Image 1 (cartoon, rainbow, N blue to C red):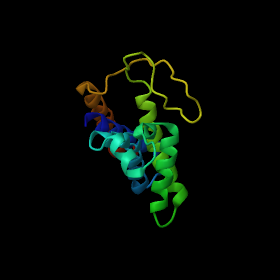
Image 2: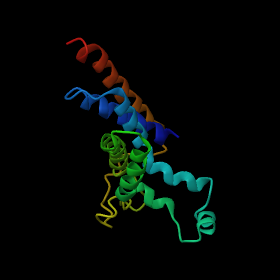
Image 3: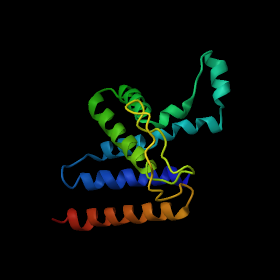
Length: 162
């Protein structure tokens, strides 16, 4: 759960910083925060196994592809079709949040020293990761909270008063 909250907080902080250069309405920041959750939808397999989904659908099925660039594009596209208007802006907001998630996951520690194939379908390559953090480390959540509080404080008191 700390990993999910970290992604949401960092998407909020990133969108807030971006809004300093060009105003971004709050509802698009919220959409980007939702988009930062999209690559973790592959965790549904904790509740329903891939084998169960294969049996229900009658075709081979694996949710691990949702945590890739292609999965983010598809999920952002589906999410953008849900809104009544401004489909392109919703897609951009959801996709920006998902990209922030994929970027943050691209630098975490993996046992074999290489990140996942998050660039699929562009590339099957697994780039070496700098192993900056372990997703279960509480210090990562603490750092995300501190970054977000700092950005919010600057936004409220320094940027808004000018």
